[in-house]
Image 1: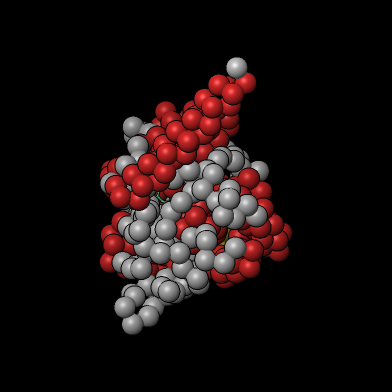
Image 2: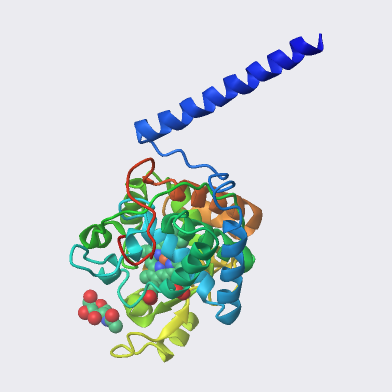
Length: 327
Ligand code: HEM
Ligand SMILES: *[C@@H]1O[C@H](CO)[C@@H](O)[C@H](O)[C@H]1NC(C)=O
C-alpha cells in the first residue's frame, strides 16, 4: 500500500519534470516570448527587492523622478518592443533613440536605471535584462507616488540594436490630434481605452514650454486663466526649456486629477486636451474623472499590456552587462 503510493508519487514527479523540460524546450524553440512574474525567482530572488529599494532612494531624492522613470518604459516599449533599445547610447553600430525628437533633452532618469542595474548586477551578475528592469522600475515608481500597482511579467531580453528613425515615427508627440494618437497606440496593439488610461500618467511630471507654447497662445479650447498663468513662464519666444506641471493641481502625486483638469479645459498639452474635446473619448475621460478606482484598474491593465509589446525571448537578444552598451 505504502509502496504503491510512493511509486505513483514518484511517477507524478517524473512526469511533471518531463512536462517542465518540454515546456522550456518549446518556449526556447518557438521564440515566442513567455513572460512570467516568477522568471527570476530561482536565478535572482533578490532582484525585485533590490530594485524597489533603489527606486525609493531615487524618488525620495527627487520626486519628479517617478514620472521620468515611468515614461522611460513607455518610450522603450513603443520602439521595436520592450527591449531596452531606448537605453543604448551612440556607438559605432548604434544610432541612439535618445536623440530622436521625442527623447532629445527630454527623456531622463538614465543614470537612475544605470544605478539600479549595477545594484542588480552586484547580487546576480548577468541575469536580469535592462528591459525587465525598466518594467519593474515603472511599476515601483507608480506605486511609490500613490498610483496603482500591478504584477510585472518578466523574461524580456535586451536588444543589440536601436532605431532612432522608428522612435521618431512611432512615439506620439504633443501636437498630435486624437486620430493620430489612436492610430499610434493601435499600431502597438493598444486600444482607445488603453490610450486614454495610459495618458493619465500625465497626472505627474513636467513638460517644457516648447511642447505647449502653441496651445497656450493659439488655442481656444483652453481655460483663459490657466493659459495666462502658463504664459508667465513660457514666453511666445524663448524659454523653450522652462517647465510646467502636466497636472496643475497635484504634480507630485498620482491620482485622477489629470482627467478633472481636462473637463475644465486645463490640459497642458494639445495631445492631452484632444482627449476631451467633443470627440469619441469624452465619455472615457468623464468616467475616469469621477471614478479613480476604474482609472487605476485600467491603467494597471494597460501597463501590463504595454509591457507585453514584442519582447525578445529565448535566444534572441542578450542580457546586457551595462544598459547603455551592447555587450
Ligand atoms: C498619448 C500620447 C502621449 C504624448 C503625445 C505624450 C507627450 C509627452 C510630452 C510632450 C511630455 C513632456 C516632455 C518634455 O517636455 O520634455 C510628456 C511627459 C511625460 N509623459 Fe507623456 N505623452 C504621451 C503618453 C504617455 C504615456 C502612455 C505615458 C506613460 C504611461 C507618459 C508618461 C509621461 C510622464 C510621466 C511625463 C513627465 C516626465 C517627466 O517629468 O520627466 N506619457 N509626455
Ligand atoms: C500661433 O499660430 C501661428 C499660425 O499657425 C504661428 O505662426 C505662431 O507661431 C503661433 N504662435 C505661437 C506662440 O506658437
